[in-house]
Length: 249
Image (cartoon, rainbow, N blue to C red):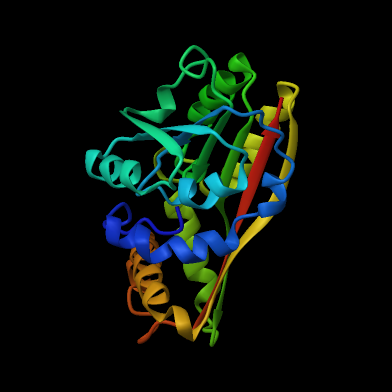
């Protein structure tokens, strides 16, 4: 996730970031998919359905989307919001426990801003499930540990490092997640492609910058409380680097 603010899963936060997410995701990776309709697509950690709204129109129809999340509020919002002509169902479950049997008849597994929350063991289980079902995976917007702020501040790199450490709490892979997932898919015979997916936020994105910034600093300050007040105001512009991964069996 780009932020681990306590409201990070709130519908308001997900709506706020949706435009930046859509602009950042790599459409070139989608172009390399060769799905044969009808397609069944599983969206892991679907949130309000932003991945479906972005991706459905880029894939051939007809499509059936199975939306996975642990928050029933988000599942309801997502199921109502996918484009016309797309059928949906919802499953409230822990996506780190999916098996190859669960993915039988699945055409594509996808997720957005989720992979960096996984531990190595959880990534292995997801990769094993995909490999067992011979299912492609498109996993977008994983943080890679780099941000750029303007104007700059001497403590920017220190805060970035503290945030990255926070992302690795409880065994989560954080900035290393996409590299680990790529290695694990490749080890199981997948063809893996990666592409940058970068938030480039300026004055028109001030609300998103402010929300992201406060969550980013709060997470860093949990690692080093002295960082809580390193800037009086959010920066005017922010670049947040993510990476997308496409794994094809």
